[in-house]
Image (cartoon, rainbow, N blue to C red):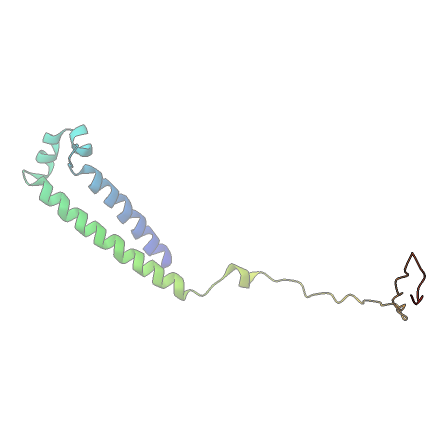
Length: 117
């Protein structure tokens, strides 16, 4: 089902790109490159209305496939991380020294440790 929608989506997007590029804009578009008279021979004298309808249809199909692919992919609930089997954590024994030495008091260098002044 997912592959079917992806295939339809790709076809609709390529068709939408082609129809938009064939439309004559301010600069003429690709329709002038291939000959403007050929577009009239192919679609008749109302080629602009035919191309605008094809654009609307392909854009609608593109939006529908976008939404359906988003819904399908959100409901798939398959993650690549869930498929990976990680090894269990290894417990490493930590050995601490039995007796911790007491901290040493700092010694006053000038006059001694406990000299009263």
